[in-house]
Amino acid sequence: MLSYIARRLLQLPLLLLFASLIVFSLMHLAPGSPVPLMLGDYSDPEAEAALTHALGLDRPLPVQYLSWLGNAMRGDLGFSVANRQDVLGEIMARLPNTLALAALAMTWAVAIAIPIGIISAVRQNTWVDYLSMGVALGGISIPNFILALFLILVISVQLEWLPISGGPSVTKDAVGALKFLILPALALGARGAGVIARMLRSCMVEVLHQDYITTARGKGVGNFRIYWRHALKNAFIPTLTVLGINFAYMLGGSVVIEQIFSLPGIGGYLMQAVLGRDFPVIQGISLCVAMVFIFVNLTTDILYSYVDPRIRYD
Amino acid sequence: MATETARDPREGKEGQGILVHRQRTLAIRRLRRNKAAMVGGAILIVLILSAIFAPLIAPYDPIDMDLARALDPPSVDHLLGTDSFGRDILSRILFGARVSLFIGLASVGWAGLVGVPAGLVAGYFGGTLGTVLMRLVDALLSFPPILLAIAISASMGGGQGTLIFALGMIYVPVFARLVRGSTLSLREEVFVMAAESYGVGTAKLLMRHILPNMIGVVVVQATIGFSSAIISEATLSFLGLGVPPPLPSWGRDLNDARVYIRETWWLVMIPALTIVISVLGINFLGDGLRDALDPKMRTRG
Image 1 (cartoon, chains in turn orange, blue):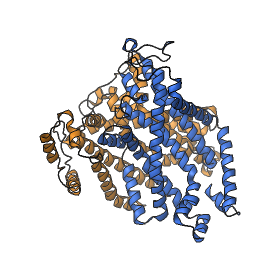
Image 2 (tube, rainbow over the protein chains, first blue to last red):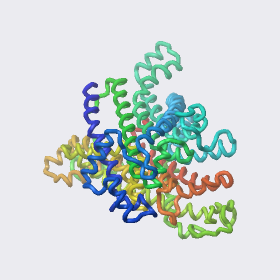
Image 3 (tube, chains in turn orange, green):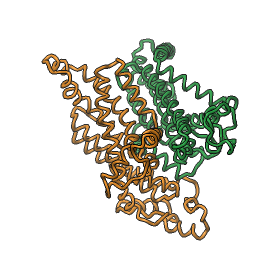
Image 4 (cartoon, rainbow over the protein chains, first blue to last red):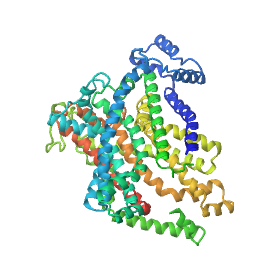
């Protein structure tokens, strides 16, 4: 296990390097200079030359990459072209909101997926199972932004139970922000809930056929205890990996969800940057999210090898 | 699947051909017994037909505006009503199927075109090239898919080509990793070793012996990719990064309708349900295909 962790950690710098290369090349994907795009209607040769120089785009590509990478490693992601604010500072101010949203979405996804997964495994191939798995597939198939619109339509517009959009930053008013995070979290977590429930069901089905469960039954252990204590513990291990991936996916999904609900997270910030062709911000957010993504995946994989020492990766 | 073929005593093309054929017949029979998959298949056929025959069956031109009749509820003239520009919703949905299916198919197609060879090469040759390819795949997979697509299409500027490229980039690493894994295990199979020892050329070995034996997993992955490409296209169009405006797109229509969610809720529901039903149908079909092609996987979610 230690050698596995060591190997993963050794791969990390290379992975980060390649990820940074992808982020860097974003600015150079389009043929020609991105500067006229960034300036839009106000473009004139003088302004173009000035911005080209300010962004360092007049230097050779490898030099640009190395200096961008060097700055990024020192925590300098450049400045926003739109308002000259420090990109990293802006991201850090908004990141807690996105993480809170993803955490809330994950919490409800797990909370609902576990009972659904267990019940459909226990009642395998009955109508309960088919209904639960149908609902789970529905959760996976409904795009989060459509679910968000359904929720707004029913809960905010018709029933007027919760606000449609807006809300304070969680760092300023965590309790006040909660009310605004419920619908977005519901919309964002549905897919994960479906994936986790399906995964847990199949793992539970496998585990329930194993000898130690039969032994437990023979000893007269009650069903409830078998399902929730004996079986769930082992069935949840493979589900762990799905959990990590889904958290990372939720970070991506937050872009659309934050946009719909006008939440003050990095997703909304990204869309603002995309519409304004604010390349340093787009690059900065992509890099930060990729780093969180890599970190979450690494943590789940290591955790996985820790809780299940039988796992051998090569 | 692969092992059955490998253990077949009748070595050579003919024996394999018969076996592959028999497996296919069995798979089709299993698929036809799966009701959900059949419903999914029917939905997909309806989608394809409305995409192909949209100009014939659509009652109106999908971009014809009639501001006098803007935001009309469903009526005999306009079966699904009109949008804020007075355009016929039914016609826009029908033509929108063209955009959705085309973008979905094209992006998965291009992802397969890049990802499958990359996976074959990385899996069969390994070495430095394989390592570099797989690290690149890992790096691509370290971005949330939709974020990658947003960043790419934002950087390249609008257009259908950009959209297909951006969405395809999501599935290139998925295909590459899947195919590499299958190649690694197939390379150890006896029939591949036998072919190698007969001096079959590398290209022929990959194309005739390895690739056909993993076609099942690739097809299943492509189906899953197809439905999520449709979701991603709708998402990007919803965000204003999709196909350029004159073309009708379900995602953009949904975004246009969002403003009127208080007054005309059906305007939101129609494109939303269209997307959900399409995706659900393709997922049902994909699930059925997976179960049919690999019955051992049945218990797995």
